[in-house]
Image (cartoon, rainbow, N blue to C red; front, side, top):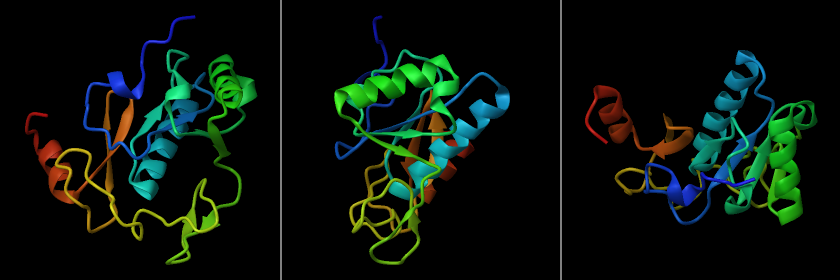
Length: 165
């Protein structure tokens, strides 16, 4: 099977080099796709990192720093294949239904975090994926061609207002 989409080939090339995440889960129904997409936005805002939503098996999970799972990944062929590939490649995985780890600074829950991790509101160096400026507030998630990107409030308003990206 040939994989075609990786973070390097996504349409917006302004992906921070620190990390890129993927979220996988069942996609057989509209509700499952909506839940998967919503969790991708939540993870993007919490970590301030781009999150690609895997809706088919044309994603090379080996190119991601972490793969989050939503729901029963074994109930649907696409997430099962992607999850198995991530495990085989040694990519860090996290079940979003597992308990959150408290942020080392504020105590809020960090999905998929390790002890000592900080949420995006507390972590230094969270940059807007568009203007590359530091984000003083919690980043806002913007969905573009299958990936959630963390944006500062100004850029998010610009995109909603319709300026060309």
